[in-house]
Figure 1 (tube, rainbow, N blue to C red):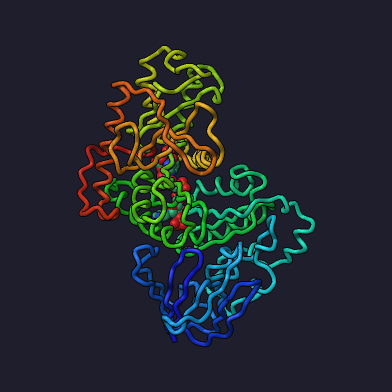
Figure 2: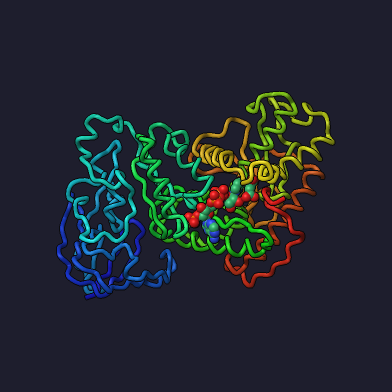
Length: 504
Ligand SMILES: NC(=O)C1=CN([C@@H]2O[C@H](COP(=O)(O)OP(=O)(O)OC[C@H]3O[C@@H](n4cnc5c(N)ncnc54)[C@H](OP(=O)(O)O)[C@@H]3O)[C@@H](O)[C@H]2O)C=CC1
Ligand SMILES: O=C([O-])CC(=O)C(=O)O
């Protein structure tokens, strides 16, 4: 038997072949669900449709989310056999949450202002006889009585759950970041979150340890934790993707090789985001070389707005603010309008022309131009490397703090007149920087997750020459990964072996 299924949320059609034993087509709270008893050996073909995400995606029957013995799906329309209409369902508000294939272990502990929209009774109790793989963790995958919970708990005032994927989740940066996310200091004290942690064979056990620590921290806002190794599962419906995992550059490894290895990771993750993430997912790429990784990820996710991709240069901004504050003898929060231009590498340009200290141009407050042009610039460019020499590993805690800052800059309005730095797509930029690369520039946000580039910036020869140098490096990096961005055959001719901040 062949079924063609239209998913309401993305208007996708999936043709399910060899579906056996449809147990029931049942209405639950005004929506229809198909229950399958057995799907062994089935396959899925997506129709060739330019608007369909993840064309050509195929799942081995053991990996596909539907490959369990009892399945619950929300439909807008189902046809059987292909083409002949079986049933059309009017789907009410809030249906979107229930429209994807539901894997019970992931979708259990939810508590928010509207408990009626959460998974409860009928839906959640349809447990697979043989769960595919364990994704939810510990108490986070236990079903409990949400009705009873909502009567007493403070969750009544909470906002709708925000779902956040983190890759490299068992790594050093994540070890700081995850706890900040869970504590509410990033998205707010009324914002429940789900954490979806992406690991690998290498790290899976460590990831379980991370989940145990999250569990033991009793964070009330942390409503779900799931762990997985497949980005197509972990990224499903996520609102934010914090992409930290990347292979570190080893001794003797060429930068081109690093670009290729990590680029491949980000190409795969871009495809997965394109296929299954929330269509307006915000993506922050941290894994190095982060600008070019972000470009690769973006190019592999054509259905997600290019503006949604960021390469983390906030750590560089924070480092630059620290240096200016120390030199001027003021507290850090007196430094504003700090731009990092370009690549997160030793060619990055910390901009002292536009920076302000206590509302005044930094050059007026720090009259030592030689210090600004040489020592300040070099200190910021090489800060990561010096830290590695002293600490024995790259910045982790301060990087996590800067990821928090980067997210908060997008979800809260930028203070009047100020801006923040982020590596974003250059196409359409007002400065004359080459198009079609990811380049750190000054941004402002209304607090809606989006940003605009600042236009009230000064430019002089010193600044422009340095911008051109970091731009040339990024253009060369892009040529090196053309095979991963769909822009032809890669040609690697990096002008010089410039370094990541940590590679001195
Ligand atoms: N943009 C910025 O400002 C900064 C960026 N960074 C970068 O962030 C990244 C993560 O740093 P950190 O958390 O300290 O690193 P860790 O080494 O602690 O963790 C990195 C994670 O990357 C994952 N990974 C993915 N692919 C590979 C691979 N092929 N080989 C090895 N590990 C892999 C591993 O997780 P798993 O096995 O689960 O995939 C690992 O846990 C690095 O690329 C680093 O250079 C660091 C500081 C600042
Ligand atoms: O090079 C590294 O891995 C560390 C890094 O990016 C930084 O400290 O800015």
